[in-house]
Amino acid sequence: MVLPKSQLWLVVVLLVAGGVSAFSGRIDPYVLDVAMGVGIAITQASSLNLINGFTGQFSLGHAGFMAVGAYSSAMLTTTLGPKLGVSTAVLQWVLFPASLLLGGLVAALAGLAVGAPSLRLKGDYLAIVTLGFGEIIKVILQNVDAVGGARGLVGIPDYTNLFWTFSVAAVTVYVVWGLLNSTYGRGFLAVADDEVAAEAMGLNTTRYKITAFVVGSFFAGVAGGLYAHLKGYLNPGGFDFNKSIEIVVMVILGGMGRHVGVIIAAIVLVVLNETLRSFGEYRMILYSLLLIVLMLTRPQGLFTWTRRKPSAA
Amino acid sequence: MSTLLQLDNVTIRFGGLTAVSSVSATVNEGELVGLIGPNGAGKTTVFNMVTGVYQPTEGRIAFGGQPTAGLKPFEITERGISRTFQNIRLFPSLSVFDNVRVAFHLHLKHDSVHSLTRGPKFHREEVDLRDRTLELLRIFNLERVQDEPAKSLSYGDQRRLEIIRALATGPKLLLLDEPAAGMNPAEKLELMKLIQFIREKFQLAILLVEHDMKVVMGICQRIHVLEYGRKIAEGTPAEIRSNPAVIAAYLGSAAEGKS
Image 1 (tube, chains in turn yellow, brown):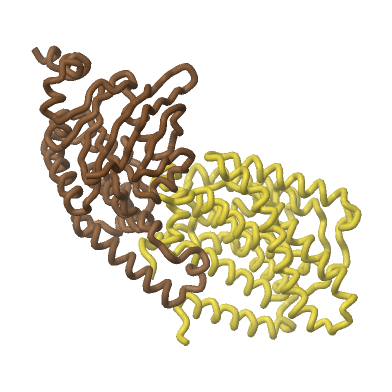
Image 2 (cartoon, chains in turn purple, brown; image 1 turned 120 degrees about the vertical axis):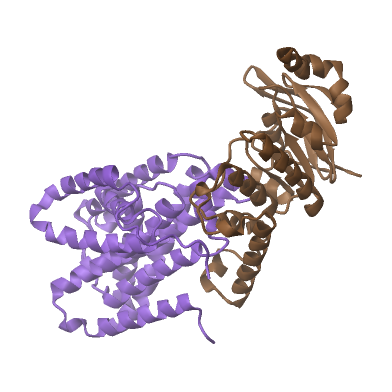
């Protein structure tokens, strides 16, 4: 069977990721770490782009869904992993993807629980609800002893590698792209443009918004699982409001509703973050300044030279 | 001819204000009916009740014999009522092509899952929809601008695109909310031809809210007249023209203004 061009691309990216990953022992560990951070950031930014960019909603709780996924998947690998008594390779290639899937599903469920009531309403309620959700998750995690409480969750095996981070990133981009590039998918853009008109044209707008939100939350959860098994340590404070804003900035910087722009923005921001590491806490000031300057000078985003394709193949 | 849309003593109150008071009206299959009345008479409110944006406080609305109470706007569109808006509501950032394509969504067999598997069935359906979209654009002479964003069209073309988009949902009844607003006399004449053409070509009923008497009197078979939320008259254009209540409420004041 001949695969459609878009799926061929996906396969190529997966193969390249696997190939490079096989030689990761020769790559400088610091570079490797940053590269994996880039992969996770692309997943986060692309999934949020589906919600905030394409569907025109405004979620401020992406870090919350990431936390849900991170803790769910880490709990699975740390509790179930040692009991299975199989080799590390099996754990990394079987249990780990299963845990990522679990993290994604739990995050998607959380997304459904948060989104279903608030997305029925028109307007910016989602921003407020997701803002609250992110904080609630953080406080719950800080107070549940079973997941380490405020001390954090330690001893998570380092299963995350280049292959997993970039495969997940590629799948995320493919899913977001695929959803949008169809007659069905144009509905997301229509909802973003004019919700009243979209509903008058027979689109179940609530369902579109919830679909975008749940799919976005799913991939945020998977990204969380990758993050957990990259750092080996989870701290509830790491999933605070600032983290959500970081992802929102990637989407805005890349140009809301641009596939390629948002990927570039994710890469740029992770690398920028690393180079600014010596400034420590002042990074957030720079972030805020960047946002203000951006909104004043280029409200449509920085990387917007790619035209929105008018029709799909 | 059987009744397509039926309003039975429909009333809606917003707090203490009764916007529409026990209005009864019908639209038959394939009929072109006008709904007129002075500003604030409740014409658009009637539209909003028919399309499910508002639920009537009292009375019932039936479409094709089925009551529409409790249905959401998109469910009513599914049943075959489509509309345009008084102030144009296109999808401004989408291309002309996509504006129409989105409205074909109702006839889709595929959904989110097929957009990801992208199998042969999905492609066949997408190609089929593309052809139907282009065909519709061609009928109205808009295929030359299909890749332009809708917001870049001229006012008249935006109005036409909104009608095309409404047609793409495959309606049995088309509601046009002041389509002639902001048009010059030549454009209005063209619009009248267009409305009649649509009715014949697509075999559907049209309910037209309009301020412009020339347009309404020129093309409608039957006219309902509203004033202060009440229906004061119903009949053919000739009957409406000579109805004393209507002359007093609407045409009369206009005639006085002229003399």
